[in-house]
Structure formats: structure tokens, C-alpha cells
Amino acid sequence: MSETTKNPTAPATPARSSEAAMSPTRRAVRQFFSNKLAVLGTAILVALVLFSFVGPLLYPTEQVSTNLMASNLTPGEQGHVLGTDGLGYDVLGRLMVAGQTSILVGLAAGVLATVIGTLWGSIAGYAGGWVDAVMMRIVDAGIAVPGIFLLLVISAIVRPSESMMVLIIGLVSWLVPARLTRAEALSLKTRDYVLAVKATGGSNTRAVVRHIIPNTIGTVVVNATFQVADAILLIAYISFLGMGLQPPATDWGAMLSEGISSVYSGAWWLIFPAGIAIVLVVCAFNFIGDGLRDMFDVRGQQ
Amino acid sequence: MTTTAVRDNSNIRLFGLFMIKRLVQAAVVIAIVSVIVFLLLQALPGGPARGILGQAATPAQIEAFNHEMGFDLPLIQQYFNYVSQWLTGNLGRSFVMNEDVSSLIAQRLPKTLILAIAAVGGALLVSIPLGMAQALRRNKPFDYIITGINFVVYSTPSFFLGLLLIMFFAQLLGILPASAPQGNTVGEILAQPKEMVLPALTSGLAGVATFSRYMRSSTIDNLHEDYVRTARAKGTAMKRVVARHVLRNSLTPVVTMLGYYLPVMFGGALVVEQLFNYPGMGLLFWNAAQTTDFPVLLGCILVISLATVIGSLLADITQFILDPRSRGGVK
Image 1 (cartoon, rainbow over the protein chains, first blue to last red):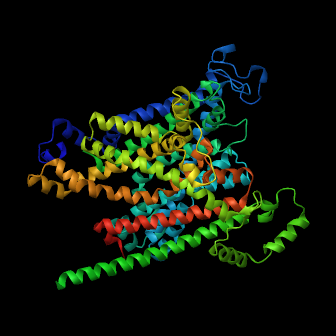
Image 2: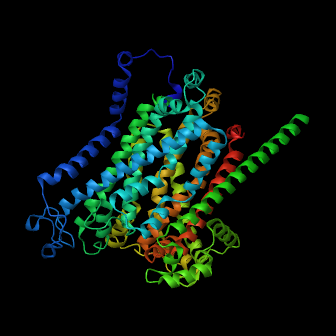
Image 3: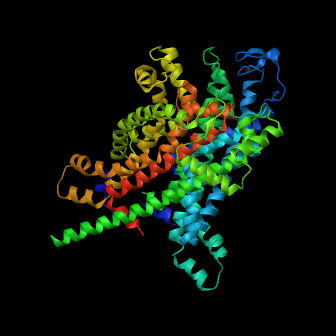
């Protein structure tokens, strides 16, 4: 309601005019950091990365061989800050190791999906005609087969390693970025600067790689952050369904799934830390994605 | 008179064209899905025979099986054999459970649908007013708080959410059972509404987070439309504009989205049914993955994909009818 009564011709405030004098990059960065959730997301992500990658240096623990003599310790017992699990792994140290997997596999899978999707979508949109029709029907078919089901079938055939997991998640999640980029490419290819490339004898590859893809970067980057968030969730689901990484490798989802059997024994440290870590990291990527969307999407700005 | 007749006629023609185009697209998509499922079957280590007979089968058994099932025929011919089987509703046979895949799915699918209707129905009842309320109080504390909660719910794996609900409602308060309704028939399932609450709540909460986001943004888009300004300028009360115009127009994307929500729903069922041990199609699929019962796995994927294609077809048709602006998209 306040929007409808606002006078659109009101003179710009002094703060606005100084903003106009800034370089576009600085303005974009300021726009990003003016989104409180985006700042919060960045802070959470930095904290989780430090925890997972620098943490083990400050708090070294044995995470490969099991120690049944020290299993199921409660937090604080024998110097284990968050206790130990049923195999005697230190839970705090395990959270760090698991975090490395969740973050790295999630990032790699999200980026892979984005790269495949961007290439596929921009080629389809730029080519148009029957090439576009065929390529997009393949995307439709892929979307019709829910990724988690495919993942489970593939995991039933081969128990995935980390790199296998990246590949499989990437291969089932490139479809949405393909659709988004294709929609952008459709409108971009009629722009003057793309037509000019072709008129001056530039190749189609040049038009796609140098002009179409760079101009979809906003959509692509925003979507990539959401892809990473989804990939981390997908890893957690696969682990929960019992088809995750082979021990002693682990991720936050696997830790949480193992903790589920402790729900009646009151071993909260086997459930909450891993569960909260997943929520935090996925939230962080979603917050950052939202902030980036505000940054790139001029229409959404005030 | 004549002009309306002409316009109606062209609308019908436009709708006919749209339907033909969309049906052809759906058929092509289903054909590609059938190729994907067929290729998956081929990708099994040792071929389908190994998947069906198990790791202990001897080469002679496998050869005999391959010959009997026609797996030694050329790939193209095998593919068409499969498709003609699928077209008659024959999805193969589960060798683990010794039952036809189609009858297994026919037993389980309705139970998954009951859970889905409870979850999605409940989610819509909450999220439509919630999303509108957020849009009307855009960028106010209420909007921020709900958006924040939605983000957190959306970022929570559903099995963790379900676990928290079990701990709170079943363990701490002891007012709801932690296990899902059990039984062979739909009637038995429906007779245990209390057991249904936690599974439905678990999958419904994720729905609320998704739907209310859609509702919020489509309401905001509509509040900026000229018709709202016109109605306001003519002195219509905001309440009336919202109730009479904005609500109806903002619902279109949400209704459309329901059609696209099917794959998410089936994926969610996989996890929720496993957590609560609810005997739906998700649990059927999960059990089949544990026993590498490939005929069941592939049959389920085929049925789910078919449902997804039909869902998005219905979504597009609904949008075509509800939102005249989308009709420009017909080429």
C-alpha cells in the first residue's frame, strides 16, 4: 500500500546521488551487503568453512579407525567435547570431516550442474527451431524422472565414491539451469549486439560463448547458489536412504541418519549438531542466492 | 453478435492448436522417458539378467534367461518389445516379491496419494492466506519473520524435520503416535487419522514454505498491476480490490505450480514414508533399492514420470484457461 501511494517523481535523496556516482561493481557489492540475510548467509558460510577445514588443525581427532573402547561417550567425557558415536568417533571432529564432504561435494555438484545446464540451455535457445525443440524435450524428460529416484537406482548398482557422487548429482540436476538459460538466450539472441556479431561474420560459437553466456551470468550465478544448496540436501537424503558414501567417509546427512537410531536413547549430540549444520549450510547458500538475486535483478530493486 | 462469434471461434481454434502442440510434446517426452528407463535397464552390470537373477547366477543360467526373455535380440527390437509390454500395462514382475509390478504399484500408489492430498491440501490452506498477508505487509517485521521461518523450513531435510516433530509431539508431549498408519487397504489407512498427522505435517511443512513464497511474490506482482491502481483511483477499498481481483489473479501461478509439484511430492514421499514406515509407493521403491529389485525400481520410475508429464500438461492447460495473457505463447 505504501508502494502505491509513493510519489514516483520525488527528488532523489542525497544518499541516492552519491550512490549513482559509484562504479557499478561497488554499487552491486553494496546492494548485496545491504541485504541483511545475504550478509548473515555469508557469515554462516565462512564460519562453517573455517570450522570444517581449519577446525581439524586446532582440534585433531582420529576419524579413520574406530575405537570401540571409547564408544557412546557423553559430551565432555574423556575430553570429547561433543561425546563419541557408537563406533568411538569423536563427534565434534567428525562434524568437521563430514562438513568438508558436504561442502565440497555440494559445491562441485552444484557447479557441474550449472555448467552443463548453462551450455545446454544457451545452445538450445540460440539455435532455436528443431534443435531447440529436441534439446528441450530431453530436458522435459529428465525433469519428469525425479532425480532422487534415479540416484537411488544408480546407488543400488554402484556404491558411490565422492567423485562419483558429484558426477551423479551434477547429471541429475542440470535441468533447471538449462531451462533458465534457454529462456534468457531466446531473448538475448535477438539483441542488436548479437545480431551484429553474426552480421560481421562472427561464428555462432563466438556469439554463444562471448555474448549469450556472459549476459546470462546473473541468472546463472543466482541459480548456482541454489543448486549448491539443493545438492547438499540431496547428499543428505541419499545418506538417509542408506545409499551414501562408504564409511569411514561421511557427511552431515550420514551422521544425522546414524543418529536417528539414538532418538529414543536421548543421545542428542548424535542428532542435533549434524542436523543443525545441514540447516545452517543450506540456509546460508539460500540466503546468499537471494542476496545475489537482488544484486543482479534490477527490476526487484526499490 | 458476429464479433463475439468470431472471437469465440478463434479462441477455440487457439485452444485446439495449443492442445495439439502440447499433447505432441507430452508424447515425445514420454517416449524419451521410456528410452531412459530402457537404457537404465541395459546399464545394469551384467545386464538385466544379473539384476534379476542376482549375483549368484551362473553364466549358463544367465544365457538361458536372456534367451527366454528376449534379451539376446538386437537392442532396438528389445526396446520395442518393452514398449509394447508397457502399453498393455505390463511393467514386468518382481522376482523378489514374486508379484506383478503393476499390481504392487496399484496397491501402494493410492496410499501415497492419500498422504500427498493431506499434506498438499493442508499446506495450501495455510500458505495462500499466509503468502497474501506477507505481500500486503511487504518488508515489515511480519513479512521478514515468516520469510525467515520459510527459509529455515525449506533448508531443513525433511527427515530431520520429521525427527524433530516426532521428538516434540510423540516423545515430549506424547499426544501423537510416532508411527504411520498401517494396513493393506485404503480404508484401513483412512481409519487411522491420528497416525496420519505427523507424516502429513512433515511433508506439508515443506509445502507451506514453497507455496507461500509463490503466493507472496505473485500477490506482490499483482499489487503493482494497473488494474489495482485503477480500482484504487476509482475509490474502491483496498480490501475489496484484494478480495475480488488480486486473490483470483495471484492464485493462477500457485494452481499451475501444483502440476509441477508432483516430482517434488514423490521425492518427498520417498523420504517421509521411509522415516515413518508408511506403506506407500516411496517405501516400495526404497525396499526395492535395498534388494536391488530392478523391475520394481524401473516400473515405479516409469509410473512417476508418466504422472509428472501429465501433471505439467494439466498445469499448462490450466494456465491457458485461467490466464489469457499466457496465450501469446502459442506459436
